[in-house]
Image 1: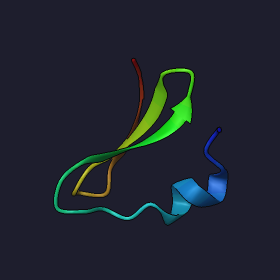
Image 2: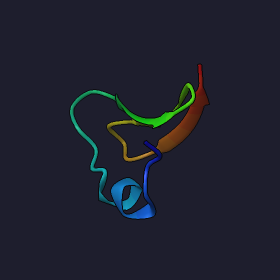
Image 3: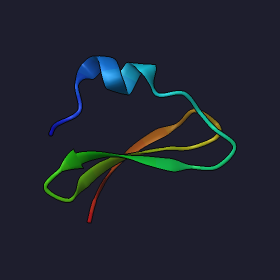
Image 4: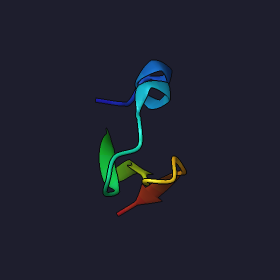
Length: 41
């Protein structure tokens, strides 16, 4: 299920980086410094 714009905006930084799956091997990586990167596996 694709990520919605609201879900991406609500993602908050944590102590360690984490991933939010978007589907099809694509995910959003959220890092502790609040940077966000799209990755494709």
